Length: 331
Ligand SMILES: [Zn+2]
Image (tube, rainbow, N blue to C red; front, side, top):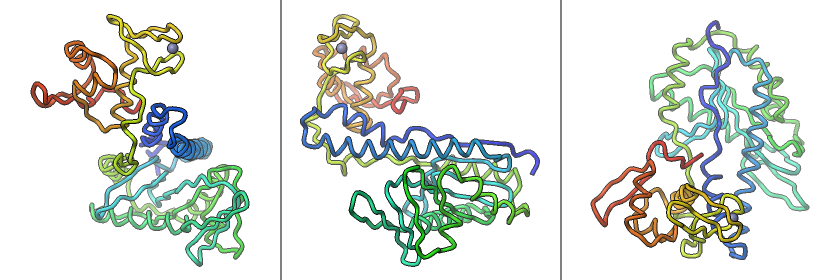
C-alpha cells in the first residue's frame, strides 16, 4: 500500500549478553579454570550475531517497500517471553523469522519435532526450528489479540545463517522446503507469501500502532548473573589500559598511567566501572568503586563518581550509584 516505505522500526544492536561475556572474559586471568567456558559462550554469541547481521544485509538487498521491519524483539507474555529475531509487517501479512547459526549437517525431521545436527563425527538433537518459530508466531498473535489488535496471516520462516551449514530434508517435507532458507535466499522464500496474500488486512495506521506497542513492551534479554555463578572474588580488579590492555593502571592526580606501556588516560576508569556494572549488577557504592579501581581516597572516589552520569540513592555510607540514561553501559 502507499505510504509504507522501507522502514526499519527497530534496528539490531549488539546483544547485551555479548557485552557481559566480554567483560567477564576480560576480567578472568589467562589460567582461570572458567576462562575457556566464557570464551566459548562469547564466541557462540558473536557467531550468531554475525549471522544475523549477514541476514540483515540480504534483507536490505530485497525490495521490502511493503514492509516495516523490527529486529530483535523480546516481548513478555503470559508469565514468559517470546523472542523474534526479525519481524516483517505488511498490510496483508506478518513474517517472523527465527535465525539459527548452526554448523555442520542439519537434518530436519518435523514429523518428530526435531532436527539432528551432525558435526565433527557426533550427532546432536535440537527442537525443530520450524515448530519453534510457529510457536513464536502463535504467541505474537495471542499477544496482539490481548491488546485488541487483529493480526493478518502469520507465515513464520527459519533462516540458517551459517553459510557453511548443509541443510538436509530426508523426508522431503514440504514445510521444510517452504520455510527454511539460507540468508541469501530470503527473497525467494518471502515472495510466494507476498503473492498469496494481497488483501489489506491492517492499515498503515494500525501497523504504526502495533510497532509502537511492540517497542514499548520490548524487554531485551540479560543473562541472570546468579545463574552464571561467577567467581567474583577471582575476577581481576583495576583499570584496564586502553593501549595495551594490561589491567592495573595507577592514578596520578587527574591521569591514569600504565606502568607497562606508559600510556596515560583521563577517563580509563569509565570502562572499568562499566565492567563492574556488567559483571556485578547495576549498582555500586563508594567503597566498592574504590576497591574495584584501586583508589584509596573516599573524597577522590566521590568526586569521580559525581562527574559521571549516575543516579544516586541513599544517604552517606548507604549511598548507591546506578547508571544514568547517558552512561555508556551498552556502547
Ligand atoms: Zn598500557
